[in-house]
Length: 625
Ligand code: F6R
Image 1 (tube, rainbow, N blue to C red):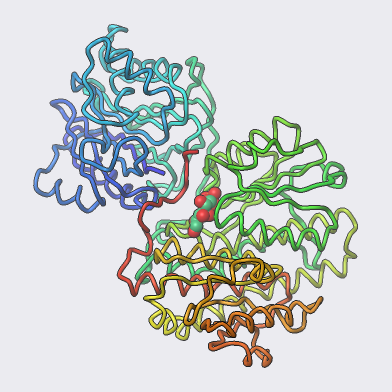
Image 2: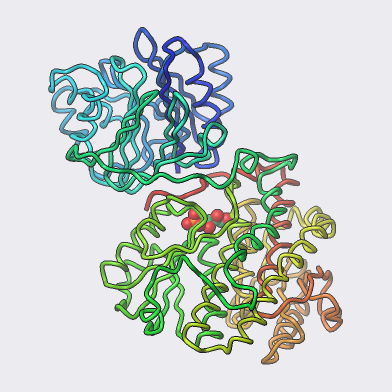
């Protein structure tokens, strides 16, 4: 939430800083798009421009009133929390004396007390934000310390002010008397450093500067960073120097471009076969044995675990729901799935024999950060399944299994979901191998089946025309329902979530067997019902049971759309439309059955004229609780 960019370079006259910051904001706009703003430290002080609305409104304003050049610049794209999306509430916020410009991601939880305190001293506020108090505090701190400006003074003021703040924040500040300097700080919100040649960068994530450098530094909790053109210095809040961890980003700027697709989401759907294949790559050997080198949890601990709790939010939680079916089946260990924001507050039973699996694309979802901390405090081991290197959740976990989906820019998660599910299968197979629940040849067979799945996903991605047509036909539906059993149930939930968030249509996913316990009352003539049909080759009459549920809704007039395996003829008697997917093993079916639902939601939203990549009220990476 909220995108943050900072630039420090050598040239006090140049417009390069502003260009770098605007390009970074364009790449970060997916994090929030309520308003945008920039500040530049010029020869004559600080110049700012900010606008409510999309970044394009800011760039138009900058064309009408260009800002002078400068050697330090910061930029912000906002997802509003405190105060609506107005010009006044947009960042940067400038101190009353005009010396300080500040941008912020997160929530300052004690801002009301600080604002009251400053108000007693006569401070006047121009916005309703929690951020503006910090700009006041920083300017006051610098003037009290008696040393105006300068990198050292600015960093010292940032450390002192951060000690007074509660909540979560990434802050970037520039000062009129400190040309070429940006100071940043982070607590519970993301901030990474980009190491350039003769210039340096800061960003909420590496996409802010990926076209300039792939060399980055991870920053830890409660650290303050100072960048100039040639130097990067990191300290803790007491001013002690800290060695930040360097890393190299393993994708390039092209990965963060649309590459000819109308939407990032369309591109990311097309990247799914690769995302799954890359996530599987190098995690098993030629004999089909699992080799998860990054599982830095003692095998004896993993052998002893008596419960797994998967914790995540939204789409990632649905990936965890799929994991439950696979891991319980393969490993015979109970798996619970919990929404991260419920987990901590329900006082879950956690012991040193519980493995907590935290799934997150961004690695920054605040509800999950808090869940991870809680689990570790209780003595449980935490494994992160994450797509973003250097992010908070893997850093704070005992081990991390990275998905290799590449950057996911569209707000609605697609390729991250598939790669999370694939990573969960890897975890399940690894644990089954380690704990002796499966014989080596069984593991090898499942690994081989998994390696075939990317081709099956490709087949579904390539066969989108029918789904597109269906989307045009159903574009005006007020309600759409999704039914599934077993691993089809989380797929139904995900199909409904995609349609809600992109097309703003009331959509609900149900366990198909639950229908007759209430939800079937929603079915009336013409209502579209998607039914995720399991393979007829599967066990436990699952297929027959789901077809019965399809028949029940069809008998009540629903327009029934089945997602069914190629060659499943029985489905033809129970569906008005059949979308075919290739045959894959039952437990792996979500990787193919979810794809038509993603495409459906995207196409309905497109037909309605909505912005698919940036749906209303949402932002990628939810860094507030
Ligand atoms: C929905 C979606 C969200 C995220 C959720 C978790 O399309 O993208 O539901 O899945 O906010 O985000 P991460 O995976 O970054 O923790």
